Length: 61
Image (cartoon, one colour):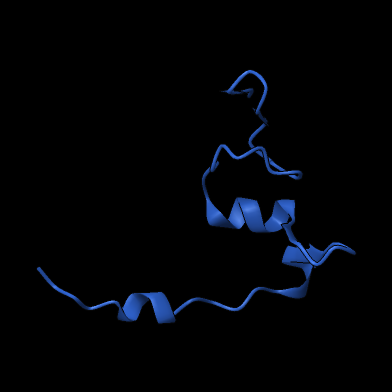
């Protein structure tokens, strides 16, 4: 098994319009970033472009 973790250090920088910081210091991803990522994480993101409802646990189209 390979112990090469070099891929973790190659993260891309976020563009200024892909996130914002709340007054409490949290990073909130925008719809642009979430679409760029390409999938729904099913965590109930504030700007989820995939329509995930955390209460029902379903994606709406």
